[in-house]
Length: 261
Image (cartoon, rainbow, N blue to C red; front, side):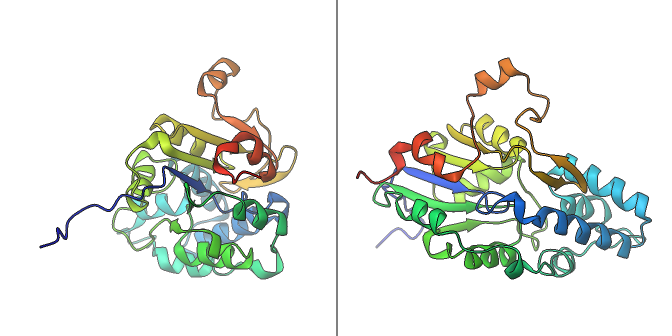
Protein backbone atom coordinates (compact mmCIF):
# COMPACT_ATOMS: atom_id res chain seq x y z
CA UNK A 1 0.00 0.00 0.00
CA UNK A 2 1.46 3.41 -0.96
CA UNK A 3 2.47 5.77 1.82
CA UNK A 4 -0.02 8.66 1.59
CA UNK A 5 2.09 10.77 3.95
CA UNK A 6 5.23 10.53 1.85
CA UNK A 7 6.79 13.93 1.13
CA UNK A 8 7.33 14.44 -2.58
CA UNK A 9 10.70 16.02 -3.28
CA UNK A 10 11.26 17.71 -6.62
CA UNK A 11 14.54 16.54 -8.15
CA UNK A 12 15.26 19.98 -9.53
CA UNK A 13 17.83 21.41 -7.15
CA UNK A 14 17.26 25.16 -7.35
CA UNK A 15 14.17 27.21 -6.48
CA UNK A 16 14.07 30.87 -7.47
CA UNK A 17 11.66 33.10 -5.58
CA UNK A 18 10.74 36.38 -7.30
CA UNK A 19 9.13 39.20 -5.38
CA UNK A 20 6.28 40.65 -7.46
CA UNK A 21 5.49 44.30 -6.74
CA UNK A 22 8.19 46.81 -7.68
CA UNK A 23 10.39 43.94 -8.84
CA UNK A 24 8.66 42.30 -11.80
CA UNK A 25 7.58 45.80 -12.83
CA UNK A 26 9.36 49.10 -12.25
CA UNK A 27 8.74 51.41 -9.31
CA UNK A 28 8.26 54.11 -11.94
CA UNK A 29 4.73 52.73 -12.40
CA UNK A 30 3.97 54.55 -9.12
CA UNK A 31 1.85 51.75 -7.72
CA UNK A 32 3.44 52.19 -4.31
CA UNK A 33 2.23 55.80 -4.29
CA UNK A 34 -1.30 54.80 -5.29
CA UNK A 35 -1.31 52.01 -2.72
CA UNK A 36 -0.09 54.39 -0.02
CA UNK A 37 -3.09 56.64 -0.64
CA UNK A 38 -5.50 53.69 -0.54
CA UNK A 39 -4.08 52.40 2.75
CA UNK A 40 -4.16 55.86 4.35
CA UNK A 41 -7.79 56.32 3.29
CA UNK A 42 -8.64 52.91 4.71
CA UNK A 43 -7.10 53.78 8.08
CA UNK A 44 -9.13 56.99 8.12
CA UNK A 45 -12.24 55.02 7.19
CA UNK A 46 -11.72 52.98 10.35
CA UNK A 47 -12.12 56.12 12.43
CA UNK A 48 -8.57 57.43 12.74
CA UNK A 49 -7.57 61.02 12.14
CA UNK A 50 -5.23 61.82 9.25
CA UNK A 51 -2.33 62.16 11.68
CA UNK A 52 -3.14 58.92 13.51
CA UNK A 53 -3.56 57.10 10.19
CA UNK A 54 -0.16 58.29 8.94
CA UNK A 55 1.58 57.39 12.19
CA UNK A 56 0.09 53.89 12.44
CA UNK A 57 0.58 53.15 8.75
CA UNK A 58 4.29 53.91 9.03
CA UNK A 59 4.67 52.23 12.43
CA UNK A 60 3.03 48.97 11.38
CA UNK A 61 4.85 48.81 8.03
CA UNK A 62 8.18 49.41 9.76
CA UNK A 63 7.45 46.91 12.53
CA UNK A 64 5.88 44.10 10.51
CA UNK A 65 6.69 44.75 6.85
CA UNK A 66 2.97 45.04 6.14
CA UNK A 67 0.56 47.69 7.45
CA UNK A 68 -2.29 45.19 7.52
CA UNK A 69 -0.33 42.90 9.84
CA UNK A 70 -0.29 45.63 12.47
CA UNK A 71 -4.01 46.26 12.06
CA UNK A 72 -4.83 42.58 12.51
CA UNK A 73 -2.54 42.07 15.50
CA UNK A 74 -3.52 45.18 17.40
CA UNK A 75 -7.04 45.96 16.28
CA UNK A 76 -8.66 42.71 15.25
CA UNK A 77 -10.91 42.62 18.33
CA UNK A 78 -10.92 46.33 19.13
CA UNK A 79 -14.32 48.02 19.49
CA UNK A 80 -12.93 51.28 18.10
CA UNK A 81 -11.10 49.89 15.09
CA UNK A 82 -12.25 46.57 13.65
CA UNK A 83 -9.76 45.30 11.06
CA UNK A 84 -11.14 42.97 8.38
CA UNK A 85 -8.28 41.77 6.11
CA UNK A 86 -10.53 40.90 3.18
CA UNK A 87 -12.27 44.28 3.40
CA UNK A 88 -8.80 45.86 3.43
CA UNK A 89 -7.95 43.91 0.28
CA UNK A 90 -11.11 45.00 -1.52
CA UNK A 91 -10.56 48.66 -0.64
CA UNK A 92 -6.81 48.78 -1.22
CA UNK A 93 -5.15 46.18 -3.47
CA UNK A 94 -8.22 45.34 -5.54
CA UNK A 95 -9.17 49.01 -5.88
CA UNK A 96 -5.98 49.87 -7.76
CA UNK A 97 -6.39 50.48 -11.53
CA UNK A 98 -3.51 48.14 -12.32
CA UNK A 99 -4.48 47.60 -15.94
CA UNK A 100 -3.82 51.30 -16.52
CA UNK A 101 -0.51 51.33 -14.65
CA UNK A 102 1.52 48.24 -15.56
CA UNK A 103 2.01 46.38 -18.83
CA UNK A 104 3.76 43.26 -20.16
CA UNK A 105 7.48 43.56 -20.74
CA UNK A 106 8.76 41.15 -23.44
CA UNK A 107 12.28 41.39 -22.03
CA UNK A 108 11.13 40.15 -18.64
CA UNK A 109 9.12 37.34 -20.20
CA UNK A 110 12.15 36.21 -22.21
CA UNK A 111 14.26 36.31 -19.03
CA UNK A 112 11.92 33.89 -17.28
CA UNK A 113 11.58 31.74 -20.40
CA UNK A 114 15.35 31.35 -20.53
CA UNK A 115 15.55 29.85 -17.04
CA UNK A 116 16.45 26.16 -17.30
CA UNK A 117 13.33 24.43 -16.01
CA UNK A 118 15.01 21.04 -16.04
CA UNK A 119 17.07 22.16 -13.05
CA UNK A 120 15.28 25.23 -11.71
CA UNK A 121 11.84 25.93 -10.30
CA UNK A 122 10.36 29.46 -10.39
CA UNK A 123 8.03 30.72 -7.67
CA UNK A 124 6.69 34.13 -6.65
CA UNK A 125 7.00 35.34 -3.06
CA UNK A 126 4.85 38.33 -2.16
CA UNK A 127 3.36 40.17 0.79
CA UNK A 128 0.17 40.73 -1.18
CA UNK A 129 -2.96 38.57 -1.04
CA UNK A 130 -3.48 35.91 -3.71
CA UNK A 131 -6.00 38.00 -5.69
CA UNK A 132 -3.52 40.84 -6.22
CA UNK A 133 -0.62 38.48 -6.92
CA UNK A 134 -2.52 36.56 -9.59
CA UNK A 135 -3.81 39.79 -11.12
CA UNK A 136 -0.38 41.38 -11.44
CA UNK A 137 1.23 38.27 -12.92
CA UNK A 138 -1.62 37.96 -15.41
CA UNK A 139 -1.34 41.60 -16.50
CA UNK A 140 2.43 41.21 -16.91
CA UNK A 141 1.88 38.04 -18.98
CA UNK A 142 4.07 36.02 -16.62
CA UNK A 143 1.60 33.78 -14.77
CA UNK A 144 2.29 30.75 -16.95
CA UNK A 145 6.00 31.03 -16.19
CA UNK A 146 5.55 30.91 -12.41
CA UNK A 147 5.06 27.48 -10.89
CA UNK A 148 3.52 28.65 -7.62
CA UNK A 149 2.80 31.73 -5.53
CA UNK A 150 3.59 32.21 -1.86
CA UNK A 151 1.21 34.95 -0.78
CA UNK A 152 0.21 36.64 2.46
CA UNK A 153 -2.88 34.73 3.55
CA UNK A 154 -5.31 37.43 4.67
CA UNK A 155 -7.72 34.71 5.83
CA UNK A 156 -5.22 33.07 8.20
CA UNK A 157 -5.58 33.48 11.95
CA UNK A 158 -1.88 34.26 12.34
CA UNK A 159 -0.95 36.69 9.57
CA UNK A 160 2.73 36.48 8.63
CA UNK A 161 4.68 38.30 5.94
CA UNK A 162 8.19 39.22 4.85
CA UNK A 163 10.56 39.87 6.60
CA UNK A 164 9.41 37.45 9.33
CA UNK A 165 11.52 34.25 9.32
CA UNK A 166 8.35 32.15 9.55
CA UNK A 167 7.25 33.45 6.16
CA UNK A 168 10.38 32.20 4.43
CA UNK A 169 10.00 28.83 6.13
CA UNK A 170 6.40 28.78 4.86
CA UNK A 171 7.71 29.44 1.35
CA UNK A 172 10.12 26.51 1.59
CA UNK A 173 7.37 24.24 2.85
CA UNK A 174 4.94 25.19 0.08
CA UNK A 175 7.62 24.77 -2.58
CA UNK A 176 8.83 21.49 -1.02
CA UNK A 177 12.34 22.85 -0.51
CA UNK A 178 14.49 21.10 2.08
CA UNK A 179 17.85 22.84 1.70
CA UNK A 180 17.71 26.65 2.20
CA UNK A 181 21.06 27.03 0.43
CA UNK A 182 19.27 26.08 -2.79
CA UNK A 183 16.92 29.08 -2.51
CA UNK A 184 17.50 32.05 -4.81
CA UNK A 185 15.62 35.27 -3.99
CA UNK A 186 15.20 38.76 -5.43
CA UNK A 187 13.24 41.58 -3.79
CA UNK A 188 13.18 45.37 -3.94
CA UNK A 189 13.08 45.64 -0.13
CA UNK A 190 16.46 45.37 1.55
CA UNK A 191 15.05 44.12 4.85
CA UNK A 192 13.28 41.27 3.06
CA UNK A 193 16.47 40.21 1.29
CA UNK A 194 18.55 40.47 4.44
CA UNK A 195 16.04 38.38 6.40
CA UNK A 196 16.08 35.67 3.73
CA UNK A 197 19.83 35.41 3.82
CA UNK A 198 19.84 35.23 7.62
CA UNK A 199 17.82 32.01 7.53
CA UNK A 200 20.22 30.45 5.04
CA UNK A 201 18.95 31.45 1.60
CA UNK A 202 22.34 31.56 -0.04
CA UNK A 203 21.66 33.47 -3.26
CA UNK A 204 19.94 36.78 -2.54
CA UNK A 205 19.68 39.86 -4.74
CA UNK A 206 18.47 43.34 -3.90
CA UNK A 207 16.58 44.94 -6.80
CA UNK A 208 17.35 48.64 -6.39
CA UNK A 209 16.18 51.26 -8.90
CA UNK A 210 18.33 54.05 -7.53
CA UNK A 211 16.99 57.58 -7.76
CA UNK A 212 13.33 56.68 -8.23
CA UNK A 213 10.76 57.73 -5.65
CA UNK A 214 8.60 55.16 -3.93
CA UNK A 215 6.35 54.95 -0.89
CA UNK A 216 7.04 52.72 2.11
CA UNK A 217 4.74 52.86 5.10
CA UNK A 218 3.05 55.92 3.66
CA UNK A 219 6.29 57.90 3.46
CA UNK A 220 7.76 59.05 0.14
CA UNK A 221 11.46 58.28 -0.13
CA UNK A 222 14.05 58.21 -2.89
CA UNK A 223 15.46 54.76 -3.54
CA UNK A 224 19.12 54.48 -2.61
CA UNK A 225 21.42 51.54 -2.09
CA UNK A 226 22.58 53.23 1.13
CA UNK A 227 19.14 52.98 2.74
CA UNK A 228 19.63 49.44 3.96
CA UNK A 229 18.18 48.95 7.40
CA UNK A 230 21.18 50.51 9.19
CA UNK A 231 23.67 48.14 7.58
CA UNK A 232 27.16 49.63 7.28
CA UNK A 233 29.52 48.94 4.39
CA UNK A 234 31.50 46.29 6.29
CA UNK A 235 28.34 44.39 7.21
CA UNK A 236 27.16 44.71 3.61
CA UNK A 237 30.32 43.01 2.35
CA UNK A 238 29.88 40.21 4.88
CA UNK A 239 26.28 39.67 3.80
CA UNK A 240 27.39 39.32 0.17
CA UNK A 241 24.06 40.44 -1.25
CA UNK A 242 24.21 41.48 -4.88
CA UNK A 243 22.53 44.74 -5.93
CA UNK A 244 21.06 45.19 -9.41
CA UNK A 245 18.89 47.83 -11.07
CA UNK A 246 17.70 45.80 -14.09
CA UNK A 247 16.31 42.27 -14.02
CA UNK A 248 18.45 41.42 -17.06
CA UNK A 249 21.49 41.63 -14.76
CA UNK A 250 20.37 38.32 -13.25
CA UNK A 251 21.90 36.63 -16.28
CA UNK A 252 25.31 37.72 -14.95
CA UNK A 253 24.57 37.33 -11.24
CA UNK A 254 22.92 33.89 -11.50
CA UNK A 255 24.30 32.42 -14.77
CA UNK A 256 23.85 28.88 -13.45
CA UNK A 257 20.03 29.06 -13.55
CA UNK A 258 19.80 29.85 -17.27
CA UNK A 259 19.83 27.59 -20.29
CA UNK A 260 23.13 27.21 -22.09
CA UNK A 261 23.23 28.95 -25.46
